[in-house]
Length: 341
Ligand code: PEP
Ligand code: MN
Image (cartoon, rainbow, N blue to C red; front, side):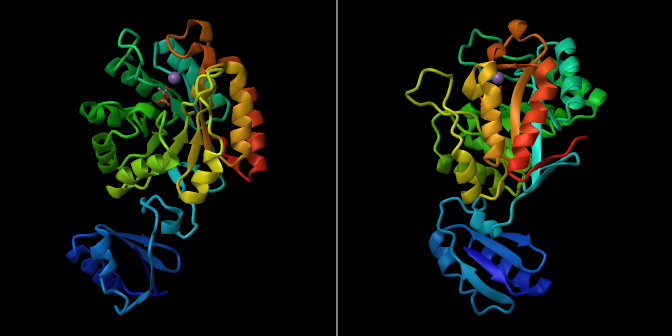
């Protein structure tokens, strides 16, 4: 339930509503807009329905949120878009963000060289996994702590903020020392304890859609993070599993307009893991940007043939600046701007 306060409602009136909501065991999420304050009452449906808050001073009206996800719903923000700021760089609204880097942190040379390419091309966020979710337990599992240290070095050298994956809550503190954004990968989208802990950590989260997750399940996963008071969630479509074997996964581009209709959260597209092949990454990136995606996360590498992981889909470092320019033009078609730093 959303409780919309009258314009100019006082702090005491807002507090009285919050107290009432909490007195029935529900949670109150206060969202202060420029003119009006909206209070989301989240909790047991029956309790929330019987709050008896209509007559409270300062209350204008109540709006039920019919979707199972509440804080993630577009309704909750009354059509306003969430803009997430990562070390001064914005994503969401008219702000488009380019995120790039190797699949995995594999060596100091590759990490530093690639970080400079990312920065020089005007991208805003550096990616690289130190903990890798691999299909085979015999495949390279990531450099772990050593990888985090290399990310830290790349960050210090270029000033770029960093996104890296967290797979195990036991690594949270370590990852938080380096990460400006924590990636929760497709395989962990429904790891509810991880979602809750990352929600509590209050760090921006890149939440990737599970291989077989519906849009609603993705939004319910985001709700776990939001429920802990962490509003900085980026939703990421990275390809879903279908009957089509011609490419790695099927990039669900309709997820862009649909997620943006259902939710206020920024939407990021990962064309790399869906395509699985370098030459398909640009067309999918252009389509995603033109469709209104708020950002793209793409894998790049100086020598894809030698990459430890996901080489066939990595855009070559030397082609990255040109790639960014093209995607920037497509994003402009959707009224979005890539702020070069
Ligand atoms: C990745 O970003 O390298 C990755 C493993 O992604 P996903 O979880 O989408 O497979
Ligand atoms: Mn990868």
